[in-house]
Length: 421
Image (tube, rainbow, N blue to C red; front, side):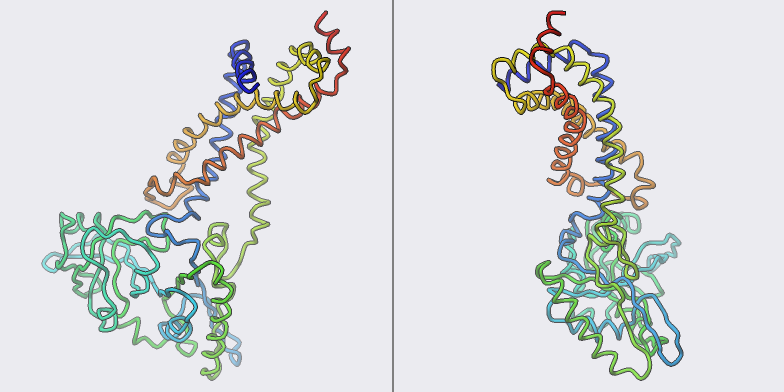
């Protein structure tokens, strides 16, 4: 039976090649635009190296320090003291990391250079959370971090720019007037991996200002943000509960000021839908806003395809009437029409799949972070193919469902009379 439906669908394509070609192209463009939205969300949310563990990550991207007597508040990042007392003391997470980023000129010991590079100052927990692909060497060690030794991990692309080769273990580079010895080289990271991306990674203990600095609000404010890795996403609530207790204990040690982490910690999907440490976007609101755009993009080709399907179905009233006379049910007829139309939709979806990558590439400058490196492991995910099937199915229901239901309501006698006219 399915083979028969397939043959009828191909025959219908041959009968109206121009109209069907226009419909297929309209479907392809619509599916491509929908898939671009899906791809951007996937790049922002799905896990890929070095952020393969996104589903188990929590982030503290904002801190509020406030003094009750002065009625003043400061929103920003946190100090090394807050990191140590509130986060390094946590027992529930698998790993905890504090980090801060800067853009600084990087030179060689015997040559002054002026090009700036992105630098992340962090700790050894960073390498447990993010799965970098090391080309050479290894990350700086706990001993390096505790001793404040100037060690650096560098990307292979940055190594080639600075030193002409990725074989740079043991060589020195200079930034912030400190000479760092390169201990590891990693594969270049895409800017889409916003939490892990940098050109150079160094221990924050190597920069005295981060540790010795005494800041305002009883030493609560500073440059650091936090990334936590849970053993399992089911531990998120337990981590938040433990953090709340640690924060309360820390605040009791202060005379007037208190620290609060507002909506933090937040998950990666929270970030992907537009949440931040100070304002959390509900998943419901995101789905309503994004869903309305996707529905609009589906309705455009659906309205176009309805006319094509109606025209095709009207020519086959007699055939359908005859099938009903021999006992075909409404359900069977609707299934046949939907299946035949799915061939048309499927061709458009297949073209749209390829077109979506071209559209994403052309629009990447304003839809993705600057200089983003698109890789196969961030683009080709099972979720993408599920999305294609879902939207193709929905488009088929919207475009062929109404004509199919309409034709099944026609009486057998009326349908057969149409054949004799």
